[in-house]
Image: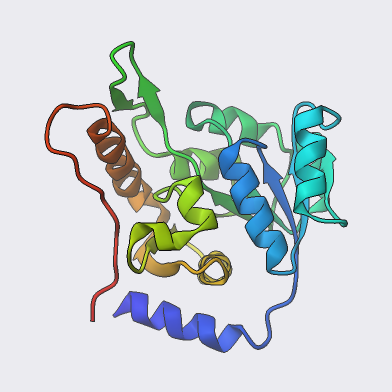
Length: 229
């Protein structure tokens, strides 16, 4: 029921939503996918990169659109209304702490705390969750966990999942969750409210299970969340 209420609220907000400036911290595949998809929805994108003048970042800026910029992470976050964390999961706390005071801003955490050993086996790398770690690093921000359960390929083309692709949205502030859900809807994904930020660990654990399946001789499977009636 809660997920359905969220979907209805998104539909109501769609008529009044305004474009925002979004800082995407990270220029890897996930940052690229989210940045280009959000730009296609009319948002202004600033990429946060340790090397904003690198050829990789400049190419991504050009690919994303004419109003896009590349800056150092803290500078990008200072200029944005919304910040998206798309960095390696085991450094997200450190990265978040380096962004400065983000009080009153929405921060979307799209990361997973993954450790991988030499045998290509993934394990869960933290005691709590990345969502909670980001909130602790940014106590004044409105942190939302989202987009961590879909691949960057699915972000760009949800149809490759062969059916509706549901994205869990977790957080402690309703307006922040609604904004993240609206972004997901604009990407052709189906958001569902799964509760407070402390539940982030369960979606992150699911990613560990799915990734380990890719490197096993056991029968393979694909794991997606889908809303049911």
